[in-house]
Image 1 (cartoon, rainbow, N blue to C red):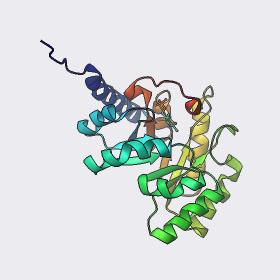
Image 2: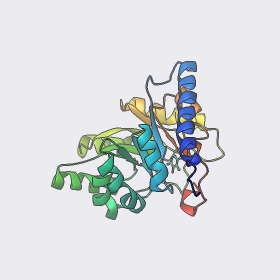
Image 3: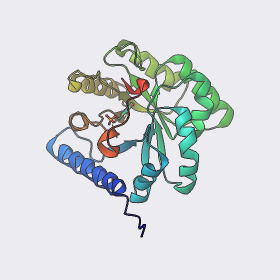
Image 4: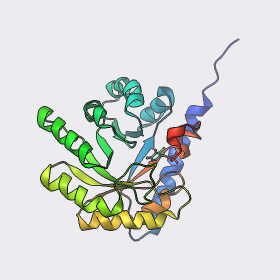
Length: 237
Ligand SMILES: *Cc1c(COP(=O)(O)O)cnc(C)c1O
Protein backbone atom coordinates (compact mmCIF):
# COMPACT_ATOMS: atom_id res chain seq x y z
CA UNK A 1 0.00 0.00 0.00
CA UNK A 2 1.14 3.49 -0.80
CA UNK A 3 0.97 5.13 2.60
CA UNK A 4 2.48 8.54 2.76
CA UNK A 5 5.23 8.90 5.31
CA UNK A 6 5.07 12.09 7.36
CA UNK A 7 7.13 14.76 5.68
CA UNK A 8 10.18 14.75 7.89
CA UNK A 9 11.39 18.06 6.47
CA UNK A 10 8.45 19.81 8.10
CA UNK A 11 9.36 18.65 11.55
CA UNK A 12 12.95 19.65 10.94
CA UNK A 13 11.95 23.24 10.29
CA UNK A 14 10.01 23.48 13.55
CA UNK A 15 12.88 21.87 15.44
CA UNK A 16 15.43 24.15 13.86
CA UNK A 17 13.57 27.35 14.68
CA UNK A 18 13.26 26.21 18.28
CA UNK A 19 17.01 25.62 18.34
CA UNK A 20 17.63 29.12 17.00
CA UNK A 21 15.34 30.55 19.69
CA UNK A 22 17.19 28.58 22.38
CA UNK A 23 20.52 29.95 21.11
CA UNK A 24 19.02 33.45 21.18
CA UNK A 25 17.96 33.00 24.80
CA UNK A 26 21.45 31.87 25.77
CA UNK A 27 23.08 34.82 23.97
CA UNK A 28 20.68 37.24 25.66
CA UNK A 29 21.35 35.75 29.09
CA UNK A 30 25.09 36.01 28.62
CA UNK A 31 25.21 39.64 27.50
CA UNK A 32 24.66 42.79 29.51
CA UNK A 33 23.79 44.81 26.40
CA UNK A 34 21.26 42.42 24.90
CA UNK A 35 17.70 43.60 24.30
CA UNK A 36 15.17 41.88 26.55
CA UNK A 37 12.95 40.40 23.88
CA UNK A 38 14.48 40.59 20.41
CA UNK A 39 12.49 39.64 17.37
CA UNK A 40 13.32 36.66 15.17
CA UNK A 41 12.66 37.39 11.49
CA UNK A 42 12.53 34.08 9.59
CA UNK A 43 14.09 34.84 6.19
CA UNK A 44 12.03 32.90 3.64
CA UNK A 45 13.57 34.18 0.39
CA UNK A 46 13.78 31.39 -2.24
CA UNK A 47 11.69 29.16 0.07
CA UNK A 48 8.38 27.83 -1.21
CA UNK A 49 4.99 28.34 0.38
CA UNK A 50 4.82 24.89 1.99
CA UNK A 51 7.83 25.20 4.30
CA UNK A 52 6.71 28.74 5.17
CA UNK A 53 3.30 27.42 6.08
CA UNK A 54 4.90 24.84 8.37
CA UNK A 55 6.34 27.73 10.39
CA UNK A 56 3.09 29.69 10.32
CA UNK A 57 1.25 26.63 11.66
CA UNK A 58 3.99 26.28 14.26
CA UNK A 59 3.00 29.76 15.43
CA UNK A 60 5.79 31.83 13.94
CA UNK A 61 4.58 35.18 12.62
CA UNK A 62 7.48 37.30 11.37
CA UNK A 63 9.11 36.69 8.01
CA UNK A 64 11.61 38.44 5.75
CA UNK A 65 11.80 38.50 1.95
CA UNK A 66 14.40 40.24 -0.18
CA UNK A 67 12.49 40.67 -3.46
CA UNK A 68 9.21 42.43 -3.99
CA UNK A 69 8.17 40.27 -6.95
CA UNK A 70 8.84 37.01 -5.14
CA UNK A 71 6.98 38.20 -2.05
CA UNK A 72 4.06 39.33 -4.20
CA UNK A 73 3.80 35.80 -5.61
CA UNK A 74 3.94 34.03 -2.27
CA UNK A 75 2.47 36.23 0.41
CA UNK A 76 -0.98 37.56 -0.46
CA UNK A 77 -2.39 34.03 -0.12
CA UNK A 78 -0.35 33.22 2.99
CA UNK A 79 -1.38 36.51 4.63
CA UNK A 80 -5.02 35.83 3.80
CA UNK A 81 -4.79 32.50 5.62
CA UNK A 82 -2.59 33.82 8.46
CA UNK A 83 -3.65 37.46 8.94
CA UNK A 84 -1.37 37.86 11.94
CA UNK A 85 1.74 37.25 9.81
CA UNK A 86 4.12 40.20 9.43
CA UNK A 87 6.41 40.66 6.47
CA UNK A 88 9.73 42.54 6.38
CA UNK A 89 11.45 43.66 3.20
CA UNK A 90 15.18 43.04 3.66
CA UNK A 91 16.39 43.48 0.06
CA UNK A 92 17.01 46.56 -2.03
CA UNK A 93 13.92 48.47 -3.10
CA UNK A 94 13.63 50.23 -6.43
CA UNK A 95 11.57 53.41 -6.44
CA UNK A 96 9.25 52.03 -9.12
CA UNK A 97 8.25 49.20 -6.74
CA UNK A 98 7.42 51.43 -3.77
CA UNK A 99 3.65 51.25 -4.29
CA UNK A 100 3.61 47.48 -4.35
CA UNK A 101 6.08 47.16 -1.47
CA UNK A 102 4.27 49.66 0.75
CA UNK A 103 1.07 47.63 0.48
CA UNK A 104 2.67 44.22 0.88
CA UNK A 105 5.24 44.73 3.63
CA UNK A 106 4.71 45.68 7.27
CA UNK A 107 8.31 46.81 7.67
CA UNK A 108 10.76 48.04 5.04
CA UNK A 109 14.27 47.57 6.43
CA UNK A 110 16.21 48.89 3.45
CA UNK A 111 15.58 52.63 3.10
CA UNK A 112 18.94 53.94 1.95
CA UNK A 113 18.57 57.07 -0.16
CA UNK A 114 16.72 60.34 -0.44
CA UNK A 115 14.85 59.45 -3.61
CA UNK A 116 13.43 56.27 -2.11
CA UNK A 117 12.44 58.06 1.09
CA UNK A 118 10.68 60.78 -0.92
CA UNK A 119 8.79 58.17 -2.93
CA UNK A 120 7.64 56.48 0.31
CA UNK A 121 6.52 59.86 1.66
CA UNK A 122 4.63 60.58 -1.56
CA UNK A 123 2.88 57.21 -1.33
CA UNK A 124 2.04 57.90 2.33
CA UNK A 125 0.63 61.35 1.46
CA UNK A 126 -1.60 59.92 -1.26
CA UNK A 127 -2.77 56.74 0.45
CA UNK A 128 -2.45 57.41 4.15
CA UNK A 129 -0.38 54.29 4.75
CA UNK A 130 3.30 53.69 5.34
CA UNK A 131 5.08 50.62 6.66
CA UNK A 132 7.46 51.01 9.59
CA UNK A 133 10.89 51.88 8.19
CA UNK A 134 14.50 51.10 8.98
CA UNK A 135 17.45 52.86 7.41
CA UNK A 136 20.02 50.42 6.02
CA UNK A 137 23.62 51.45 6.69
CA UNK A 138 26.33 50.07 4.41
CA UNK A 139 28.84 49.77 7.23
CA UNK A 140 31.41 48.01 5.05
CA UNK A 141 31.09 50.61 2.25
CA UNK A 142 30.63 47.77 -0.26
CA UNK A 143 29.60 49.04 -3.68
CA UNK A 144 27.52 45.94 -4.54
CA UNK A 145 25.41 46.33 -1.42
CA UNK A 146 22.55 48.63 -0.62
CA UNK A 147 22.65 50.96 2.33
CA UNK A 148 23.63 54.54 2.99
CA UNK A 149 27.33 55.20 3.58
CA UNK A 150 28.04 55.59 7.31
CA UNK A 151 29.13 59.23 6.93
CA UNK A 152 25.86 60.09 5.19
CA UNK A 153 23.63 58.17 7.59
CA UNK A 154 23.03 61.05 10.02
CA UNK A 155 21.76 63.44 7.36
CA UNK A 156 19.52 60.80 5.72
CA UNK A 157 18.00 59.82 9.07
CA UNK A 158 17.45 63.47 9.92
CA UNK A 159 15.85 64.20 6.55
CA UNK A 160 13.52 61.17 6.75
CA UNK A 161 12.39 61.92 10.29
CA UNK A 162 12.31 65.73 10.49
CA UNK A 163 11.52 66.79 6.94
CA UNK A 164 9.50 63.89 5.55
CA UNK A 165 8.05 62.79 8.92
CA UNK A 166 8.48 59.18 7.94
CA UNK A 167 8.04 56.46 10.60
CA UNK A 168 11.74 55.59 10.94
CA UNK A 169 12.07 53.09 13.77
CA UNK A 170 15.71 52.07 13.54
CA UNK A 171 18.68 50.87 11.53
CA UNK A 172 19.70 47.74 9.68
CA UNK A 173 23.08 46.48 8.50
CA UNK A 174 24.66 43.52 6.71
CA UNK A 175 28.38 43.28 7.57
CA UNK A 176 30.78 42.18 4.81
CA UNK A 177 30.94 38.40 4.56
CA UNK A 178 34.46 37.92 5.86
CA UNK A 179 34.63 40.82 8.28
CA UNK A 180 34.54 40.71 12.05
CA UNK A 181 30.86 41.63 12.46
CA UNK A 182 31.06 43.23 15.91
CA UNK A 183 32.74 46.38 14.55
CA UNK A 184 29.81 46.84 12.18
CA UNK A 185 27.20 46.11 14.82
CA UNK A 186 28.88 48.58 17.18
CA UNK A 187 28.93 51.30 14.54
CA UNK A 188 25.26 50.89 13.72
CA UNK A 189 24.39 50.86 17.40
CA UNK A 190 26.26 54.13 17.93
CA UNK A 191 24.42 55.84 15.05
CA UNK A 192 21.06 54.60 16.36
CA UNK A 193 21.80 55.93 19.85
CA UNK A 194 22.57 59.41 18.45
CA UNK A 195 19.09 59.55 16.93
CA UNK A 196 17.29 57.76 19.77
CA UNK A 197 16.24 55.00 17.39
CA UNK A 198 15.07 51.89 19.21
CA UNK A 199 15.23 49.17 16.55
CA UNK A 200 18.45 47.49 15.46
CA UNK A 201 18.12 44.81 12.78
CA UNK A 202 21.44 43.02 12.66
CA UNK A 203 22.66 39.45 12.73
CA UNK A 204 22.03 36.49 10.40
CA UNK A 205 22.51 32.71 10.73
CA UNK A 206 26.28 33.03 11.08
CA UNK A 207 26.46 35.91 13.55
CA UNK A 208 23.14 36.48 15.30
CA UNK A 209 24.57 35.71 18.72
CA UNK A 210 27.24 38.40 18.27
CA UNK A 211 24.55 40.80 17.06
CA UNK A 212 22.44 40.11 20.15
CA UNK A 213 25.46 40.82 22.35
CA UNK A 214 25.63 44.23 20.63
CA UNK A 215 22.00 45.03 21.34
CA UNK A 216 20.20 43.79 18.21
CA UNK A 217 16.44 44.09 18.69
CA UNK A 218 15.83 41.95 15.64
CA UNK A 219 17.83 39.20 13.92
CA UNK A 220 17.22 37.92 10.37
CA UNK A 221 17.78 34.19 10.16
CA UNK A 222 17.29 32.10 7.04
CA UNK A 223 19.47 29.05 6.50
CA UNK A 224 19.68 28.09 10.18
CA UNK A 225 15.90 27.61 10.02
CA UNK A 226 15.12 26.48 6.47
CA UNK A 227 18.42 24.79 5.62
CA UNK A 228 20.88 25.88 2.95
CA UNK A 229 19.49 27.84 -0.01
CA UNK A 230 20.41 27.25 -3.60
CA UNK A 231 22.88 29.93 -4.60
CA UNK A 232 21.48 32.81 -6.54
CA UNK A 233 23.59 35.70 -7.71
CA UNK A 234 21.56 38.33 -5.88
CA UNK A 235 21.96 36.49 -2.60
CA UNK A 236 25.66 36.56 -2.95
CA UNK A 237 26.17 39.51 -0.74
C1 LIG B 1 19.38 36.17 3.14
C2 LIG B 1 19.43 37.25 4.14
C3 LIG B 1 19.48 36.96 5.51
C4 LIG B 1 19.50 35.55 6.07
O1 LIG B 1 20.72 34.94 5.80
P1 LIG B 1 21.10 33.53 6.48
O2 LIG B 1 22.57 33.53 6.48
O3 LIG B 1 20.50 32.48 5.62
O4 LIG B 1 20.53 33.52 7.84
C5 LIG B 1 19.49 38.03 6.39
N1 LIG B 1 19.48 39.30 5.96
C6 LIG B 1 19.43 39.61 4.65
C7 LIG B 1 19.40 41.03 4.26
C8 LIG B 1 19.42 38.60 3.70
O5 LIG B 1 19.37 38.92 2.40
